[in-house]
Image 1 (cartoon, helix red, strand yellow):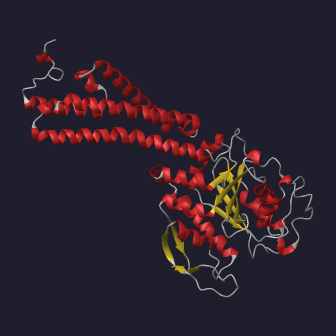
Image 2 (spheres, rainbow, N blue to C red):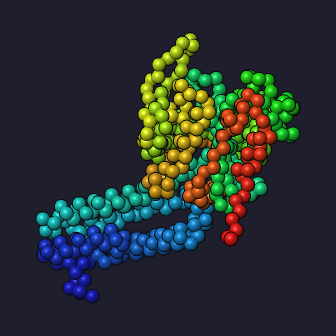
Image 3 (cartoon, helix red, strand yellow):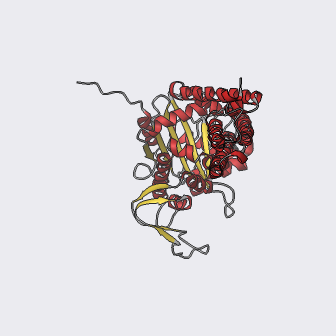
Length: 449
């Protein structure tokens, strides 16, 4: 075929208008259909390879879109699998390298010296933009996948486990370890019970100063405390974490099962308090809690009354002034402010703190919408991997993600075991367990008259 019939492959290099039009065609083809510029104007072998790889990518994208619409569960299983994410990283790096090669080769084919001087800068800028995109998009996919792999590392190995009585029960602990603390004591203790079908969730707040905690027969703590943890003010429920850590022989297999003796001791206590079987836990470091909120972009809290922040007393016991205030009304809080709001004891008690902590938990759920998580995934994943430990199996992550989507669209039931319902110094555990039964009873449809 003559050069006249193939002006892109065999252009008239003496015609600047023709070379300029050709340049725009080549850079546009490279952006829209990588590999096509080489097929029409360069190394056809390279072009066919690039074009084939582009078509394969389009097919993969279409498959992912179809799965997102028609087989969301299967897609979630795939993207929560470490092997799949590693493969995605490799694929992203492959396409980044391929597109850089194709883009640089396309710019070579343009022959800038023969392009109109007025168009050279625009064509070059368009080529640079294409180069940035070819590196940036797969680079973002690769870095996001690496962050996801790190996040998946907090989950435990093991097979999926069926719900118990139609529900999944999870112990949530907020840890207060720090340089000024001797070990870790749970600053916040909650049990979340989720209906395995509807996603309806109830969160039970257990005061950290709850006394006389009972243990079910078979618990390692039932032996030393057959009548419950009943030694008075020195036997509060949050001390059990330290007790478990000091007696690791009670839970010799805890570490092997992605836990530790302190967590297992608190879990046994929470089971004794609520009457629920609790197969899973999540432990969140409270300082890391602030990092997670920052990664989400902050949270909105409706503060009912002006709250002083700081410690009530100096180390010698004398009164200390507050170091600041959180004003009443709707406030957008960063991580540190939300942490103060959750933990401040100034002029308040543990029960008021529990109510504020619940507010923050709900605000995080509201803020963690799919768009926010997607746009800020890397920061959230990094914060999560650093601050959370759990024994939830990685194999159940996809299921829990879907269940959480249902939970988010339903009202959250909250039951706190505090006065006047419960006297923490002399609690009635029959009342507590009946409250749990009432709050987790399946909701039946009201018959239509």
